[in-house]
Length: 306
Image (cartoon, rainbow, N blue to C red):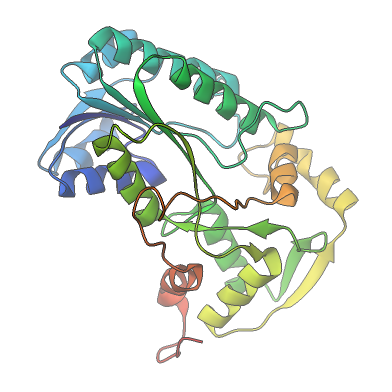
């Protein structure tokens, strides 16, 4: 199949690209920065289309003779003109319109676990839900995947957690640390996307999460065991964390958390209905194994798994 792929140079996009190639597909990848395109052309089966979601001509070239679209572009922090509304809603609308005009038969969209229209939801989750509606109303056969926190080499939040445990004698924990996450391995997510492309009988929205729902403290425990260290944890009161998060509005590139990110952290990110194994046939990897792999370059030689 010929697959039109957006977000191909991102954390998830690179894994999905490689998975599609290994399964014998031809990939046409939309790339904003021409300097990053060279690395993609080293792979056989990849054709690079230079452009962005606001470039209708680039989207037209991307969709030419495509059998399916995998739309992965998303942002977690708004910076300048790159707003949630512009990327998650406007960008998805343009990709869907280009796919319809080209007669593409299959559309696979990356949303997020927790996406919803509730007024109490963050702008991130609300605009992800709006993007889902655009895909549902497109008339194209579609699957919408909602991953939880994605774990693997290159995961920004988990890399930050690992670095804190490596270097900080005191590790801050916001609130009581009992909010739960259900990390899913990057390669399991990539496999689910590939299956979704190939199986038009899979229609609708699907939660994608790993097998383990862990509190923040339990995740820190895994990192400490993987690194062979113990750290003292200090509780950061919620009012202090909320005040600090306000800096994220003015300095999103340097603040550790924005108010929306803080809200999503405290809400947790779990599901009782992950479709990874039941729908996509992917036996999920345990998060302890993923954390151990991520920590391995920094762990003492000979450290035994626990």
